[in-house]
Image (tube, rainbow over all chains, first blue to last red):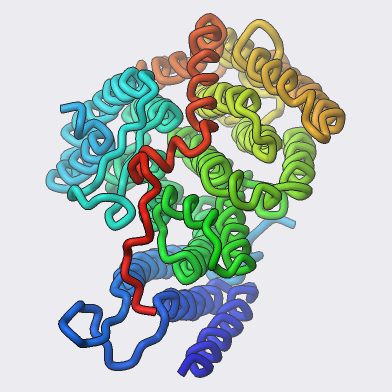
Length: 108
Length: 503
């Protein structure tokens, strides 16, 4: 399972970085989303991966660290808000400049 | 009452933002905003006075003891930064209340949220909480940056938001690595566990390096500083003035992490790269000021110049240097913000020439000319104002540093360039005139008051230099006292590793 998660994080970050380096805002936005997925998975894994363990301490049952789950939840909420705002900003730039290319309308 | 003092600044700003969201009548929002900012200044003064007894006030949120809960820590440095942010916030808000806040919706709640993020970032003692306050501050700043509209602002807003979102992703990766290797995100606990054996040194080092990378991104260290000038130039005048403290959040964060966690455990992390890059930033910013075609761009480059100057000092681990850093930080924040406000006032007075450094109508008000002279003297580091004293303290304390000679040459050279550029800009704006009279509209009193107050900070800091530099020295020695922060947060006896881990 560790290998699977590591590959998922790696592929997501690689795709995210590739898209962020594009010169149009829409791919960049997608890249940021992918990067934040990768980061969330990574954060989740920082509490170690345990199967069939709830983040609750009960007699005899094994449990998993609840803190990374809380961190991931916070990170998801913040990342979602940021991405939504960036999408609105990108749409505004698109309607003002007529294109979503970063160099459009800039004096040479 | 004073038990709950540490959380008061955050609560005031947050309550004001909620009130303003509840009723969007502009006069009400202005009143609440200014009241909150004034209250924050008073609380800042109170906290600074409280903190000056040398005791660190630790506030455990929800009474969950550290390291399990989140703590806010007020020491002299944090209290001084709260006061600085509050003063700056009040001046910027006063300026904005004369019309800038009408150009879009929700200016006032966002301004309060930005203040809350700033204050929280200075006060918190937990790295994840620091991330959350950074995001509060950033989300408000993205929207404030776009306030007023226009393609230039939208475009600058996009690159600013993208680079900071990437920064946030790296921040989270660093936090994940730290939690994965050390099992804590409380700064004091982290500092303690870094000294204990039994963790993956390489991973912890990588995590700390990533963390510092995020902070220098906020502070504008050279390879990561290209976003700063265009963002600050594009922002509206009062917003840019408030942003003058945003680079300083990164600097204070580095200072804290470096002194508390890095100096005992991995003292060589900042060696060899921070000072050269910071010197390069100073050179880059000095060249930028030479190329600036308008006053606001010049102000933006000056902010970068001061950030670079402060970053030069961060690789040094002596209390004397830190004291000079704190004094210079206060001076450069106030002077940088004053420059933005003054540029806004000059723009109003010059009609079509705006703040471009070309011949145009001459600003009519006498106080504007005198203010520019005072401010230029302060910013260029000429006697007798605070810029000179700040730079003098920096240069004296940095003489014994490893690269002391290089630092002297670069800082003095940059000061010389700044002097030439400011003199030239003053000549362009005030002497090179096409027509005799600009628009004769009087400047609205809130704008004049806010600008004058921040410009007056230069002479005022110089007059009060002795008590202020004494305070800075006490703050620095409190910060540098080994183990004091850890003991204050976690209790005098190093807490044994009691936490059950599921590993």
